[in-house]
Length: 188
Image (cartoon, rainbow, N blue to C red):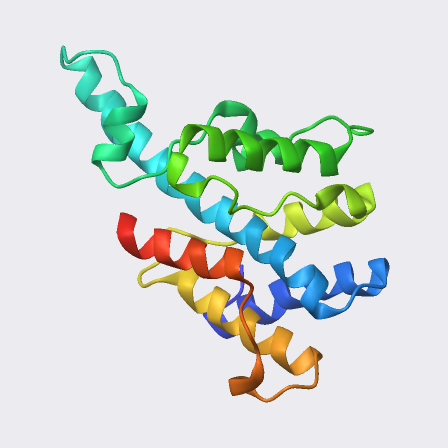
């Protein structure tokens, strides 16, 4: 595990940059899928934490856990086949791009405020590149103090901007990512 967030950010960026190197895409074309995977990792972590808490309450005699219970906690509902661990543990030879696209669709179906927002262009990438990226992002320690997701996201935006040869103020965030940021702010 990296000794600080800077080491973690650099390690994750190197993994994400492999997507660019192995796909021939510009940073403006691969930034959204990369940030989508980071978002999925964060949303799944929040969902898992809420699930643990809700299951403890359920054992004490409460009613069955529903999607509404998660929403009441300000957490996105993540179906099993959309969870980060599900994607991480897919058998070798699986179509990872198709599975990630499906995960994003399932999340949108369960969380209507995300309809049409999440990236679903993962089939354009080679399986081995996506597998490496998913495995690397699995190492994001979401349980440390502070907003690790926000810091990594901000770091990546700056790196994507630099990769495009633009100054910080000239990088325009894709509308889908702006919507994700707004949703993240609303569910906090």
